[in-house]
Length: 74
Figure 1 (tube, one colour):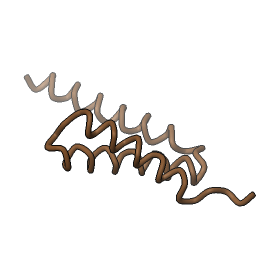
Figure 2: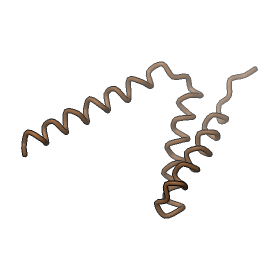
Figure 3: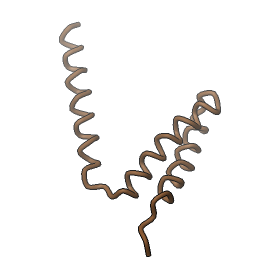
Figure 4: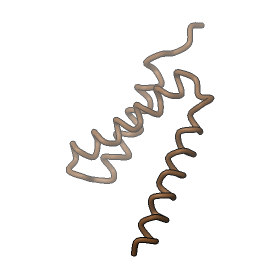
């Protein structure tokens, strides 16, 4: 059982490291889009009582809002 916990912990650390390194070359607008989608997904899920449809809808709306918050000047 201890071996399974060690493997799970290693896999979690590896996944977190890879996930964070994927954001290294993102622009500010891309980061805002990702944050908006994450916050929107949580908010949509909470507001609809844990519904997956609410989470997906919230992620879509949050992503659009996050994308539009800091648009590059034209």
